[in-house]
Amino acid sequence: MTGIQYVKNEKGETTYLMVDWKLHKKAIQSFLEDLDDIQALKKTENEALISFSEVRDALLEKGVAEEELVKFNVQD
Image (tube, rainbow, N blue to C red; front, top):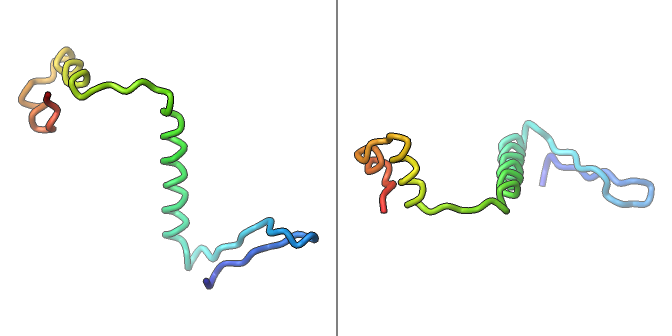
């Protein structure tokens, strides 16, 4: 693959990766966005899940009209 170089230390171990930004900008950005998404998901791993019914009920309690919920398919 062009535009990628591995830098090794004196022991011959790969310690750095150099990537040509101009050639691989989109792939690097996509990779970094994916890492952000993974980190965000990991932060919510232990959070309790709630059902659509619970969300619907909470929205109704807050005054959201039933017709608005139907638009977004938030119904039982």
